[in-house]
Image 1 (cartoon, rainbow, N blue to C red):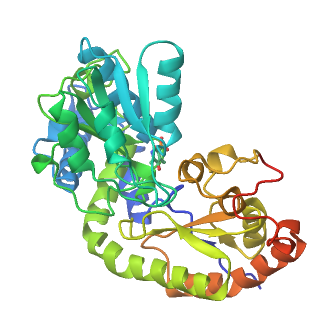
Image 2 (cartoon, rainbow, N blue to C red; image 1 turned 120 degrees about the vertical axis):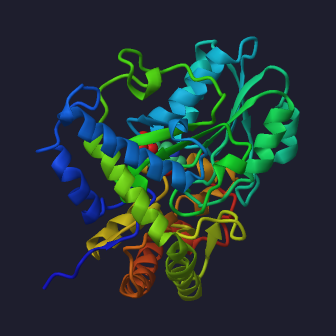
Length: 402
Ligand SMILES: *Cc1c(COP(=O)(O)O)cnc(C)c1O
């Protein structure tokens, strides 16, 4: 008898909702037209895209539909925002970001710095993952082209005070962009009453399809396209519209709006029960991130003196999927850049596991994990020399991975 798997890796990707798939299907078959065409095949698709754009603008609380520019995902939206600002903000050559951004931002800005196209300020965070506001204030200047700081961190769920950060950026005439890929659909937004200039989101993090995302660009903020060609998206992102994906994202957005309240109630309750249960059953473990200011679906727990990869392997054998928070660096023994930026001791950062929920999870999922985890942790600690000698190996001691 096989038990059904438990999926707790929703910050990596979510299951495309069956209603989303159903909404997309006709746009592969009967309604295959090119939205730009001057006939019924095209205009039908164009109308459906307009409806999807309206739904997305509504979810974000954006004032105008044309503030939404569809992209090929969250990564492309991030790149578009940052590269555009460097071109439109003449005379300004500096970028400010945080040490805990997604690689979609950090890898790009490192490349811009290396190739001499920008000076980059990477603002540190404290042990709870909170931004060093004073360091941020010091970095802002009349050279700042753009600030790009995420709304919430994908590994710990820590939420940043983006409104305050945006107002501070405007104080020196800089644009403010936020990677809100982990936030859209989980927390209500009202961008028309916000200081945020640009915002990135991604379909597959909210039960929509992969390979579709959007950049919100406030009316009046100039945008240089990343991809040039045809006049699609008002000349701001060329290439025939990915109609099935845009319409799927529209459906995902409608569902997210309908389920939004659930995030703070049922989803959060599942997360909290798992977290409390694990901490109670397993010693030498602690939550990382800002527990007071966190996404309702995310919990990141460090199990000291063992390897996250080994934990994931044994969890996988029990049919439980989570993440070690370093999915992008699997194969390397370096703990995640996020936990390193927080100065989490290596002996703990190595054993950090991220559990990320969605509305599709159940109480049964939590029960399964609470039952499976204690023996897994115990087994690995029995084999761990660091566990046996934990009195000798102080938390900061890092004998193998220095
Ligand atoms: C997943 C993710 C991205 C990348 O989005 P894609 O659509 O996969 O390109 C960017 N930023 C954050 C915070 C993410 O979690």
